[in-house]
Length: 194
Image 1: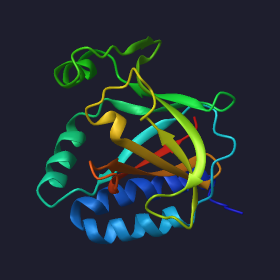
Image 2: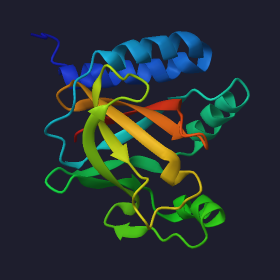
Image 3: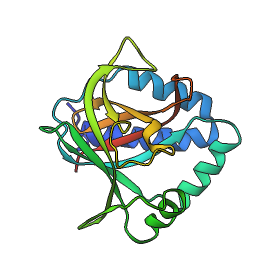
Image 4: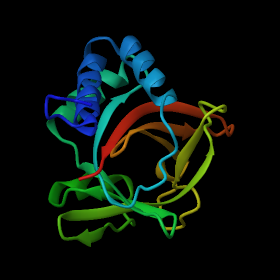
């Protein structure tokens, strides 16, 4: 039992933030620690409703990752995800206003939905499956591929995989499906319940 008054969810969130900072200085070490932490997780079973989210880091290449870190330090329109456990679906919570500008440039025909605290975008289905990056680990899959309204460019090639680290705190891997059908890990994100 913790005596500092800090919940395990809060302590885990602080660890995610520390790993986000560490990734800016030593991506290889942060990636190894994030992967170990991810592998210690379990399939989320009671995730329902809105979550707050952060992009912990990208893991693409030595040129792109620092640029993504710099941009997202200044501007990050993604706020988290929203889950409907009964339906096995969800969507992404986005800020309003300028969040739509890059979306309009990349996907001019795609329309975000209005929400009371911003916008909702990129619907997904959820289900349990073996991880593509960790085939010996069961994960919650966040799958964008079969949602007809999602843009074909990038979004429908994303497969997020999520595990619960402690109740209320979750770590995810962002995987990208290549034209050959292989999945490449391109980053980590974290979610927490309000």
